Length: 184
Image 1: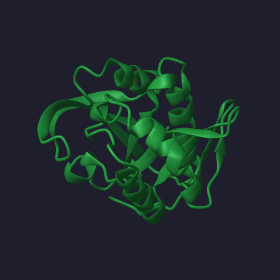
Image 2 (image 1 turned 135 degrees about the vertical axis):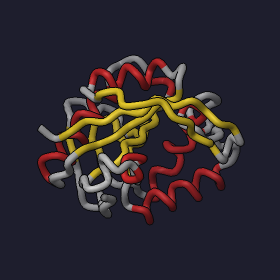
Image 3 (image 1 turned 90 degrees about the horizontal axis):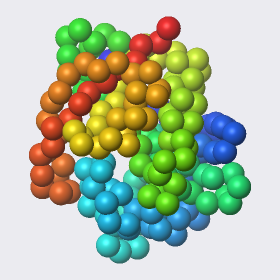
Image 4 (image 1 turned 30 degrees about the vertical axis):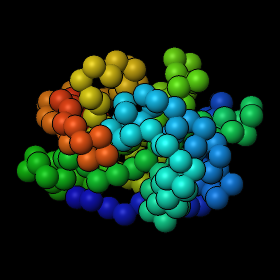
């Protein structure tokens, strides 16, 4: 079952990151990573070509209240996002009664391979299961996105099935591996 989540006043700290709500002042940091070719495409959206496009996305993050900004504590710079979204599992009879959300994440290309996203994902898993009392979390990655697959596996998710995902912004359909993690 889908539930509403509001991260507006939530702050989660990890050794290197502060996960917090988005602010207007994050515009340039968001544009800095979202405008890099290949970053958004790994998640199903076209990299940003204008600051106006980024401003619209920032406003949706702020108004939707379900996406964390990933701030690198050492620099106070936002280097990614991690959202809690409607899950594919809500449409599956085996999972429909569960309190469940889907994780979606993006990290600046400059920070790939440093273990930052598993650090953020594990902190959000802890928050979702212990503070929100969710029953499960789901996540997916496009087949061929080895970086995202590693994050998912490091975080303990179990493979469920392969499906397809149509990325409207790219006008392209991807094969997608889908995973679930149940609260222990």
